[in-house]
Length: 505
Image (cartoon, rainbow, N blue to C red; front, side):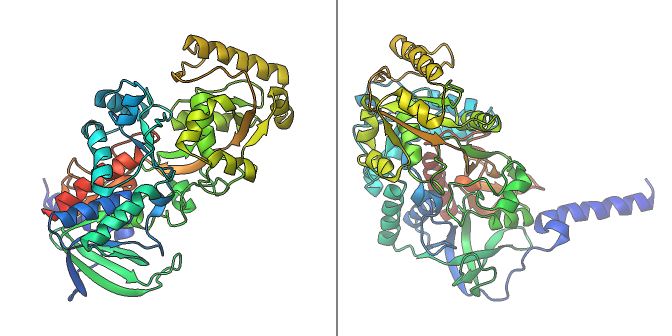
C-alpha cells in the first residue's frame, strides 16, 4: 500500500471515529461548559407515562432526580391517551373467562409488528403485563373499571382494562402525585436545546432553556444541567411535526389531522441524530382507523367506533359492505379506510343498543355526550342509517344479515374476525352510527436501545454511556404496527427499567 493510500485510510478512520460526536453537515456537538449551573444524578426528559415512571424508580433507587417538560403542563400525549392498558392475566379477564397468556400476547405483538420488533423486548413486555398492572394499582393507586375488559385490533382475545376516568390522566395524575411525594420536581417550560457528550463520548448533561414558551424558538434563559449518573429520554413522538413526518412518510401531509397534543414535535429526534444516536424505523408511523372527522385531535368519538362497534357491531363503507376485519391491527384498518376514501366512499361504524352494554359499563356517560355533540347519531332502523349516509339500503341489510350469521356461529368466514362471547346479533334498534377517518397517531420507530434501555451509538454499535430512553421515543417493541392498549404497557415497563438503570450507572 502506498504512503498516500495509508494516509487516506488513516484520515478516513479518524473522521469515522469522530462521527458519533458530529452532526449533519459536520456540525460539532455541543461542548461541555466550563461551569455547570446545576448538578443532579438523573435528568428525565418528558413528563408522560414513561418519563414519570423513570423518575419514580430513579428516585426510589436513591438518585437525585429532576423531570424536564417543554410544555406549560405535564403529561404530554399520555394525559390525553384513551386510558386502555394491556393487562394479560388481570382479574377482569378471569371474571369474563378469557384464556390468555404472556406467550400469546408476545405472539400478537410480533405478528402485528411483521417481526420487525426486537424479540427480547417483546418477551420482556409480555412477561411484565400482569405485574405492571399490579404496580399501577398497588404502587400508584390507579383505579380501573373492575367489570369491563376490552379488545383492540390485532389482539387474539380481549385483554385491556379501562381507567375509571376513561383517559390516560387516570394514570398520569397518580404518577405526578407519586413524584411529588418522593420530592422529584417536574419543571415545566424547560426546553432541551442540546444533549452534551464529553470527549470520551459520555452524555454528561443538557443545555436547556428555562421559561421556554412553545413554540417560540430560543425563548427562555440558557442553563446547563449536569447529570452525574444519566439522562433518560422520554420525549415521545413527532406526529404534530409535519415537516419531519413527511420527510419520513410523504403520505402524511399537512391536511391529515393528528391525535397528538401540539408539543409532539421532532426537535429531540433531530438532536439525538446529531449526537450519533442510532435510530431505526422512523418511517413507520401509525394512523388510527377509528377517529371521527367531526372532532379535532383525539376526541372521544373513537371510543364508540372501537370499544362499541369494532368489538360488538360492524364497520361498513358507504357501499353498504364490510371492507375489513373490524379487529385487525390499526394499520390494516386505517389503510383499508384510506382505500375506501380514495374510491369516494366513507367508513361508518354501526352498533345496536343491546350490544353497547359493555361499552356503557366501561365508559359511563360517554355515549350520551357523543349523541349530544352529534358525533354519534341514533337511528330507528337500518333504512334511516342508509338514508343519512347515502348507502344502498338493500346492500346494507344483506351485509348485516350475513354478519349476524357469523355472530350466531361464532365464525366469520368473510374476514376471520374474533366474535366476542357476549356479542348479540344486530337485529333490534335503536341503532347507532358514526363516521371514521384516519389521523396520524404513533411513531413506532426511534432510538435503538438494548434490553437495559441504553441508547446505542450509530458508529460503535455500543451503548452511549449515561444515556437511556423509553416510550415512544424508542424503537424495538412494536415493529411495523403498535397494537392498541400496548402503549401504556411499553412506557411504564421500559420507563421503570430506564430509571432503575440510570440510577445505578
